[in-house]
Length: 157
Image (tube, rainbow, N blue to C red; front, side):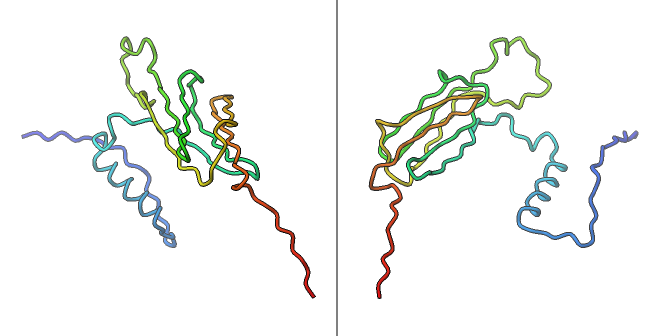
């Protein structure tokens, strides 16, 4: 009976005697070991697109910035219902995708929906949407009651 030897590329192992372990480093190490053991079987076949976003406030408004590279404004839909802000989009595959024979395909395609619960009420009729360099920026003015108010401090003797 002949046995075939298969050479495996070993990853360099970091050996540090005083390494600090935290929750994230332990998770990273577990993921590395799982991927090393399972190899290609551990990777998902397809991934859903999740547009990363920042939601922050200024004195006057809430601002949502969402990275949607490769999309155009026509591929997006924004709606506001009460304090629920929803952004929908469609990442379309390349038109010649069926003629391609992929060796690696990591760019996700398909529809995505992100819904955010806004922390304060906004004026929906004054909302503004801008799109520049793959970033969708929504500016949602706050209602007067939600705006920060400066309260003067009175000195009492």
